[in-house]
Length: 294
Image (cartoon, rainbow, N blue to C red):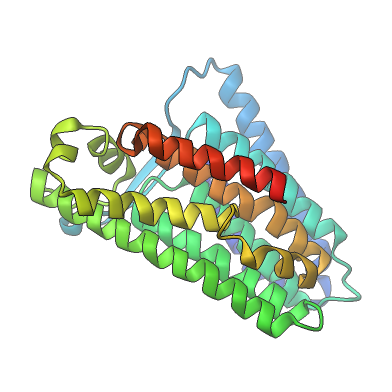
């Protein structure tokens, strides 16, 4: 419940920053610093208590049991590292944002993006994972579109179209996995643990049509590669970095790339057996090309 409290604190802080107006800069800096300290203290306590793997700080709030919608949270060791990185990134973005140059809405959007990132990293329900995935997109779009350079309108639209189309493919993959899980097990659920375990179950995957199997994989991989971004789906990258204001560039370079990496290692990695050697080799090749290309 500790990590859920941190998420709710950041979400509430975003609303308060908008209301405070003239004092939003100071409040955002204080809020970001408190968030970073809280995440670090949580991580220290977690590992000093003899952490041995798995998920900690789990909560499970049923919203609609009949269709498998729960607000479920949990933090793995990998997500924990990214939570610390998220705290550092957004604290840096808050402290470099000059209140003389930006109104309170800028500080609100920084905190709203941070709330989306934290929500994404702690979510253990695919429906809410997608909601937070999109929640990050919206304020970043406005950060570029409202406070960016001379070509901010076209660049922010390009950023939105690229990332949103990729997100739609991921949503379709989520619903496909949700539907086939129900057909096989007779249970409707968006719970990550259940669906990811099913994708590692030979009985379940052998029952999947080949087209469905590869469509599910494609939707997730495509969305994550766009967010990294990776060659050849990186066309939004250069213009967005160039036109975004300085705080926006920090968020783009740190937070959005972390989203793609978390998706690949936290979600696609368990699918390794399905992707096969050829698929993994393609991903490695794309990674090497991206490193040399960028």
